Image (cartoon, rainbow, N blue to C red; front, side, top):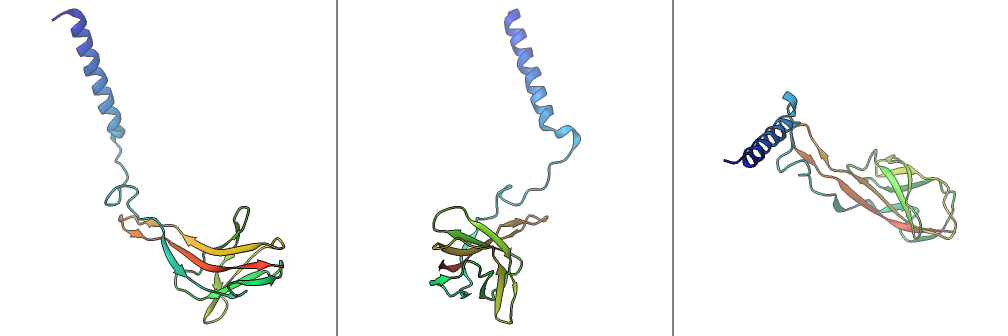
Length: 148
């Protein structure tokens, strides 16, 4: 074998050994992955609804200082933040939903812009448990209203 071929082979072997050693993680163990890999939980499950109560869905002339939004009470909604998405512009985060009565939940909202239609929603992200199980996320649609 020629000297060039031997040097080339040694270089390939050395590089391969270094590459494999780097994969070993220096003796550590890789974190447990859920079945199917690190992104095995499905995306949000869209299509849950908690209809607007106050203001009503489709309401117009709503005060810009209404201060809160009330929806029908739904399991899994408590503690999630309300999101108001104006017809133009960036979404606005409000407070978390909490029980307002035995059948409704409310969340506080900031002062709104006049003559603007807002779509009301909330969502929770999928969660991967330590055992690899998935708790699906949920996207909540609630309705819309227009300010005066």
